[in-house]
Amino acid sequence: MIKEEDIQNIRRQADIADIISHYIDVQKNGRNYKAVCPFHDDHDPSLSISREKQIYKCFVCGSGGNIFTFVQKYENVSFAEAVYRVAEWIGYPLERQAFEKKEVVDPFVKERRVLDEYTNFLTYELASIEGQRAHSYLLSRQFSKELIDRFQIGYAPEKEASMHFFKAKKFEAEALEKAGLVNEGRVIFSERITIPIHDQNGKITGYTARRLSDEDDRPKYINTANTPLYNKSRLIFNYHRVKSIARKSGYAILCEGAMDVLGLEKAEIHEGLACLGTAMSDEQLNMLEKLRVPIRVWYDQDQAGKKATYHFGKLAMAHGIPFTIVKNEKGKDPDEIFCQYGQEEVRRSVESTIPYVEFLFSYLPDVYNLSNYEEKKQFANEIKDVVLTLSDPIEQRMFFEQLKSITGFDFLPMLTQPATSKRKDRQTKKQTCYIPLLTDGRKKAESYALFSMLHSKQASKRFKEEIGFFKEEKYRSLSLYIYEYYRTKDVMDENELLLLLEDEQLQNELVSLMEIDDSLYSEEAFEDCLWKIKECAISEQIELLNHEISLLLDPLKKVEFAMKKKRLIEARNEIRHRKEG
Image (cartoon, rainbow, N blue to C red; front, side, top):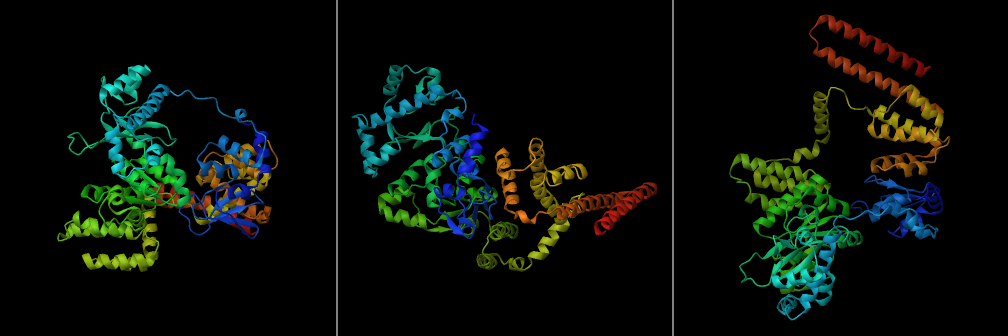
């Protein structure tokens, strides 16, 4: 485990602007630095880097932290690994074994060895006389030797040859079963071109395999069945390579199958991913979200492919994943386009994309019967909901006009009445929520109180004694760390506190407070905040009583509750009087 002393020394010696500049372009901006945020789809520099406070903060996505959290998030590594990498950058003498965790025993080490050695066997077979037919097929499809080697493409020979290999290697029957290579003593892959499927860390988990001839009556493609290592819903083909490439290029391309990705690779396009024909799972969506780049969707142009595009769009919108649809005018997959039209046509297709709503205008008329009023209404509502998510008012107007010309429904007034809509939303929420949401006044007061606690142990003590807790959950959680910090120390080191936080939301909240100018802290302002919070707390109790009184039928109970309300109003008036005095 890494020593606390080493962590603090590295933090003090490292310069956050210098370290971040190793990963992204950083520009001087007054006293601070700015950069395009790598953690969301950013075009204008929204990431602010403070050398003075040694923190970064994105004012669009809210991501923030210190140098360790940046490296940890950017490289998707553990905190300890991030510390080690920063230490390497600054030349700090830190022994890796000093903090590496005890090695965890992999329960599937036998299965991984089987898959690794079998992959080597398959690539050897492709280059052998037995694999000549498969090799000729790949050459006819314009696969280069470099591409074959890089993706470890191989050939599964007749079943007897594979079984002979397994016996020669003395692989255990159970390991072969768990690796998905054998089922009830029968070899799974035979006389097929094989492409390994890797997990996020680049370890082989299974294969997708294609038959050599269309005259073969077997399925065109087969994949490894679900095993302890191979779970389709948790895998995306080529993800382990694309996760670093996409950050540099700024996008990724989602295809249906591995051959589509390899078709892109032939055209020197390295951003291709494939979900291997499975329905998109939450795990796969989370993986795409972690890329933090827009997705270009290139599914097949048949009805099944369009349906898959439609469903992906709905899921991606729910997950907040930015995406567009490849406008595939040729109606073919990337491999077919490359073989028939060449590299430039594949590149043109990748660059030619349309927004999801434009795709819906062409797809949904085949789903809904627009001559039926109810179905036409469903069609209009579905497109309307997507149009309202667009940030460009010109595009919103254009698509609403198009929708009106098709259906006769006019949604244009919605663009000119945002205030009314919001007011109705607030009224609806008030009717369905007994206890009112936090007022801006209390939330701002709590935020300043938390800011004050970072600057004064006495302020922290007073808040705990006089108020007790924060109503805002994230403030409440952060305050517990502050109380614990002051239990052993008298002066707050905000960067030290930041290292104690594991929750990303709390890290971002603390960085937001650290961004506030220290000169804004004063005991008088903190005092005002305490009065404001007390006043708001009583006002909320009064509102709750008002609601309860409105539901009462018993006149005696109404009198009892009215007396409680009177006492609360008197207490609130006293607070206001003392505050003004």
